[in-house]
Amino acid sequence: MYNDKVMEIFKNPKNVGELKGANGIGTVGNESCGDIMKLYLKINDKEVIENATFKTFGCAAAIVSSSVATEMIKGKTVEEALELENEAIIDFLGGLPDNKIHCSILAKEAITEAVKDYRKKQAKLAKKAAKEGVKAQTKPAVKEANKTKEKPVKEVKEDKTNKMAKINDATKKMEETKKRLSLFAKREKKTK
Ligand code: FES
Image (cartoon, rainbow, N blue to C red; front, top):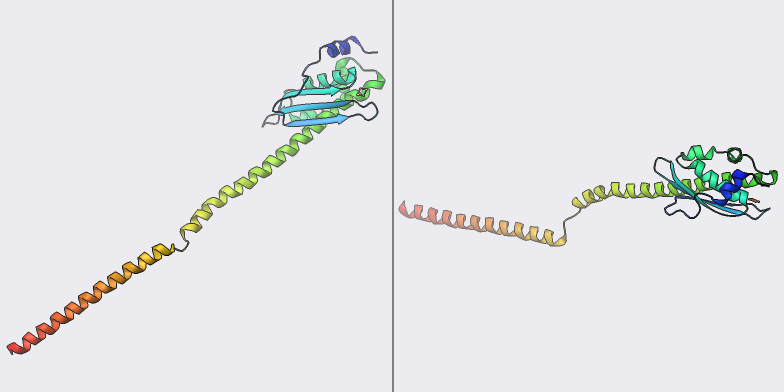
């Protein structure tokens, strides 16, 4: 049923298992056969797929297609990975039986789903970052607004007390000057 290449990869598939730190995960299934494929992608900030692994519960062709697909998209950009057609997987394998073509399609669909998941997560992160950015921008404004806020009651009371003391001092001095002036006037009268 399968050619040697398919059997060889089936016996020794690459990139099997979960991927820690994966930021794009796609799960797809085929209703008619019941096979399920889960693809894990680790995509860096330049949108390059640094690593790709899979977990497939299905036939030999599904496992082999997953293995080949992960090998083909590693080191590629997300956009390049999306361009991968299942025919490329079939060509690489030297062909698949007609009733197993859909297994290679499943691998392509898994890539699409994993990228969708990645984009969704990125959008969420961007939203969060934008929110925090707004907060960071408003912080200095709040600080500035606080500067111009009314003085605390204690400070206002202290200010008033100081002003009153100054007024009292000035009044005292005026009184003393008045007294001296009247004394001076009295002496002047006597000497005349
Ligand atoms: Fe369905 Fe292979 S038989 S994925």
